[in-house]
Image 1: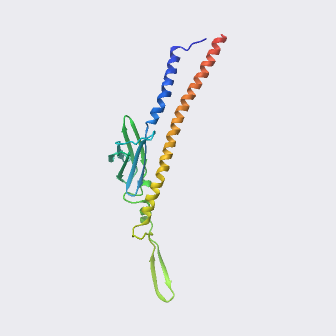
Image 2: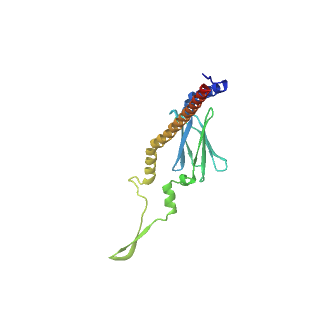
Image 3: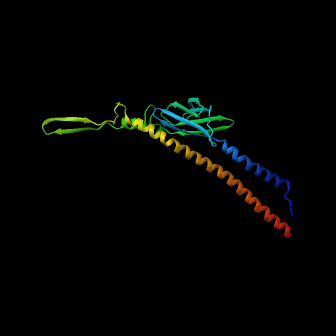
Amino acid sequence: MMRPDRTHRGTWIMLIAALFSASPAVAHKVNMFAYAEGDKILIEGYFADGKKAAQANVTLLDTTGNTLASGVTDAEGQLTVPIPSKGDVRIILNAGMGHQTEYTIFANELGGAGQTPVDQARAETPGSTMQTAQTDAPTPTSVTTGPMAPANGMPLEPAIERAVGQAILPLMRSVSEMRQEKELGAIVGGIGYIFGVLGIFYYLKARKATRS
């Protein structure tokens, strides 16, 4: 029976080492999601195993690579910073030990620095004025429509936006976790595929050697 030479044994050893090292490497990969809310950017870093990326360095850059702002995540892996620019904002999160990730929030997602998307839309659209003719009076009455407000007089739209933002956070986390699980499955599947191909190769090679 033909025995694999040292080169082939070395290949098997490297593949086995890759198989057992791939899972921990992916499990400790740092991830991040960030979004704009009002005049702030909310950032959260976490590892694929669910651990929070606490005390991670966060840097915000513009499209030319200039630093706009920086900070450090708290114990929950979170950081909130004012929107530093009206343009695209590139966010880099460095959790140390080579764990780094980045994400870009585009200008159209920011809604303008210091403005919510609703505020920006309202600023770009002139207020509508409706003229109402009275049958018993010749003078028309001007009625201007505006944002609906609760009893305390505060605008309702920002409160709704905050509530919706908080409601979709679990969904955003779930989507990110699903992506990481898919990456892990792809890596393990790829290694298994390589093992399968090598197994077929050695089988055919052994059959050829036996016949000869």
